Length: 258
Image (cartoon, rainbow, N blue to C red; front, side, top):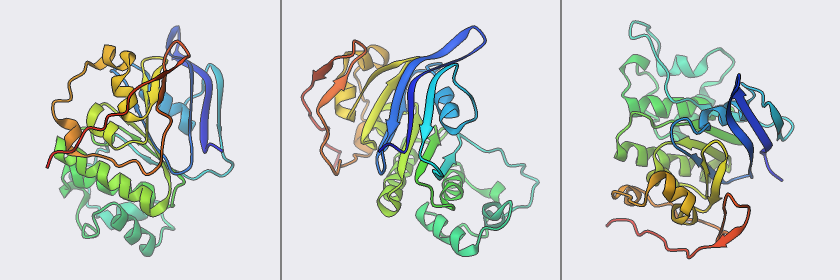
C-alpha cells in the first residue's frame, strides 16, 4: 500500500501546462528521487503532493493521518536575528528538548544545539532543517533540492545521512534534485520528469534509458563514485519508457572509488 500517490495528474499556471498525466507512488521505507531539467515540473509536483497546489486534473491520495516532514531548498535567516538552533527547533512551541536532541542526532549534528542560526555554514543549516523535519517522526520525508549550494562532497555526505535516517526510522523519502548522478546513487528508484514521466526504475536502469540520455547525456564526471547506495532489496530490472512498454536493461553497478 503506497503512502502517497499521484494518479494521472496534470497541473499548470494559466494556459501554461507544467505537468501532463503524471502518475507516481511512494511506498513505505523506499527512497525515491525525481530528476529533471529546469522547468520540468519537479517543484510543481512536490507542491501538489504536500497540498500547496491543486491539480487541474487527476488525483493525489495519501494515507489518512500521514505524517510528512519537509526540507526546503533554503531558508533565509536575518543575520541580525539572535536565535539559537535550540530555539529554532522548538518553534512555534510544544516541542520537547528530548525530541529536538534526537532529531539533531539523526541529522548528524548533535553539537549545534546552542549555535546561532546565522552562524551556521550552508551544510550545517541544511542538517538543522533536516532535524526540524524529523522532529515529528514523519512517515514520509520530502526534500526539495535540499543540497542546493553545497559542493559535491557536502552533497554526498548529506545523502549518506538521509540513508541513515531511513535505516533508523524506516520512513520513506521522496527527493527532488538537480544533482543527477550523486543523488541517483542514493536512491532505490528514480523518476525522470520532463513535464511527464519519461522513464522510471532503479538508478542503473534509468541512467541507461534513451529518454534519460537524451535529456542529460551519458557522462558521470566521476560524481557517482562519491557515494554509492547499496540496494537492500531486489528490484525489477525494467524501465517503463514513454511508450508505455517495459524494456529489459542489463544491471551494471558503478563501483565506488577506493
